Image (cartoon, rainbow, N blue to C red; front, side):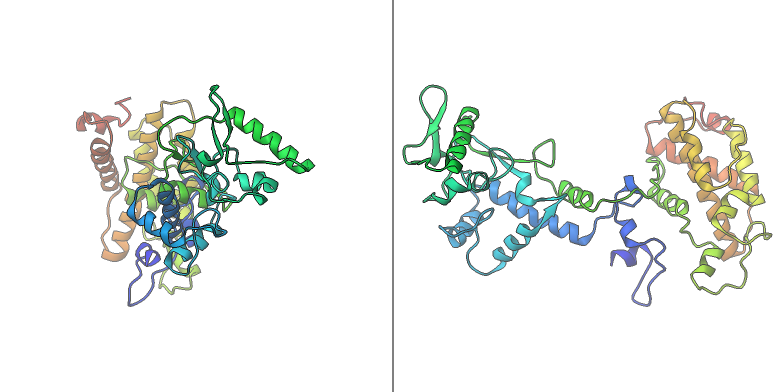
Length: 394
């Protein structure tokens, strides 16, 4: 459904998919559109159940889950015992990997009173559950679902000691080593008071978010950079997406349609009618477009640059040591020029209407003024000054 919406598909037929769905769903910083995959959204929503189970201690739903699935069974991260919806969620979350680590390794307990964090099964000291850190001691544990308060307590001298109910016999080399680690843990842990808290390790705020889960899923795919496009926030999203497609050479020019086995009567450029229409020709080499660019460069008080393709054209704002907003405004203007040329081309193809170069340049000036004035902090733009030089505000 999302693909059909993006590429204008319908019940009558599917539209042409100009860019692969894998690229569309990659983050913007590596050349995609940043559209989330449905499976990533589903994984993030299911992961939220684990976070809610840990944090919503007084929730009625949690008490129901614990009463049904709790007990002395062998569950580790989340309680599960009988078949049903909750078991399916837990089985899925046990297999969920976020950037190379299981979900439970991203949720860490922060000791308050030690009454809600499981001593052996939750991660609260170090990077793994203590049942994995001290397997020898865990094998001798009688109450494996005990909380932190059941095993350690203040010893009265501003330090921590073992609870009287926990008796450890160190009779092997392994158990002696683990016991030494226990003593080191006691020297570093303290009860801070109040309720136990949970920290989401994937975000600096420590708070769980669906966006952070989706980001981890994307990072885990080892995505390769695919010509990152610099977006212009003061330009409408439709223009940004058009430029994203243009920089990937994924717009329906006549040569592109022929490559897609779509029969068309004429492959020549609609604007100059002299050369087969490719993206490179239409926006850079076409005589008509050259006239538009020449007028725009003159308007911006910039010497006519020598470029051979659209990528070189769009890199021009990055060159030099101009101010940040100078580069943003110039890039936005270049995007609007490409948009105006494309709209003019389509008007000629589908309506048979021709526009003069001065009319296209006038469209560029008016659109750029309107969008910059209403979509940025430059609210005091003056039309008469904008017509003379769009960079005057800097």
